[in-house]
Length: 464
Image 1 (cartoon, rainbow, N blue to C red):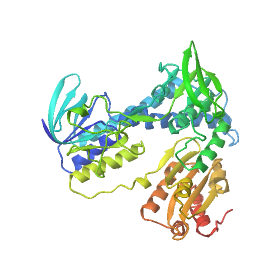
Image 2: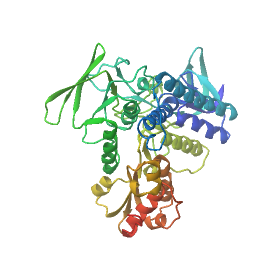
Image 3: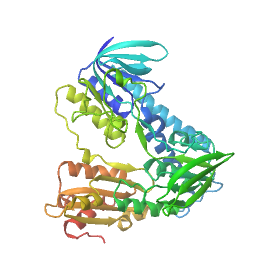
Image 4: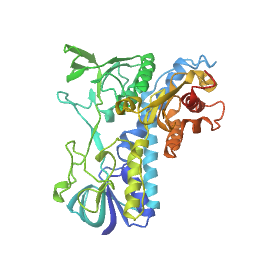
């Protein structure tokens, strides 16, 4: 069989690239080694984790907030089996949706491991082996959880995010190695259900790549859930002893300290996954971190072979991969698409949610950029008080001279959705005053964006 484009990997980057290629008239094949499409995001990442986050938030509200709302709940119980089953149902339905989209767009789905024989010949090794010819290839094989030396994963007590999505019991004490997005989200799930959660972090803050204000605010909120944090700790080992996990680390003074829990989640980031591709056969270059090297058009050093998503440099985000998938498809069609990597938002789906786009305050200081700050607390909003979601704030950073918005950082209810307003404004190079002069419906959480913009414009927020 001969194809115009073959995509290896069916995660958000891969399947979206396939759809856009098909829309543009390319005869398209999508290769996936697992039984279901959707990659990490749909199967063991974004979608299942959000399903559990929502379920655990419902339980937490029933246990702690319903009474204040005048709702009395007797005999409240957690049915973890049902919670996991609902999550699996959401995943199944979402993955089946991708199957439908492939059929709708007449994309051939080939099940098996895709590997290069030549730049235009791909072997697909599944239940049966087949070889296809292709004009162009998009590598979209994603990433896998990174590990630390000295930690012996058994996937029962010492686990990754994949196993954390299918627990058979609620941990009594969950130790999380790493204070990044994935660990905090999954830690939130089990803290809400009653687990003690201890986060051991190598740096001096959680979500260290985001604006420091957000990390500080989130830390306060998570402490209310019972989280405890151990910063500037270097983990040396984690071992299972019966039903307990012993974690050994050096603290900031260089002293050895130990932690004991019944489960340990290793969440220290992810690394590019290229196993089985046989990149060497065609001479595709990878960098020192194993990521496929690409140029400004996301083309590798081998003409006609592109790479997108977690397997290349940049933030490991599903929506970044999707943008790159569309970008490559349109580039191959002779169009002139663009991606502004500075305006790809980052989100943490804890509660309160956390979101940011553009430059952080720390980055602006480092670059010596003159800027002004406008900030507005969620607790000053009538909508936030009505829903009892008063933690958090919106912070806008604007150029001191031109007033152009350089960064927007927020923590609070539904900011995962609110951040889109900031992205839209910044794509059109809006000033803080532009945002401040737009009407925002009342009462809404979005009013915090307007108020923060007013604060940045001339320190004239109206409601504080």
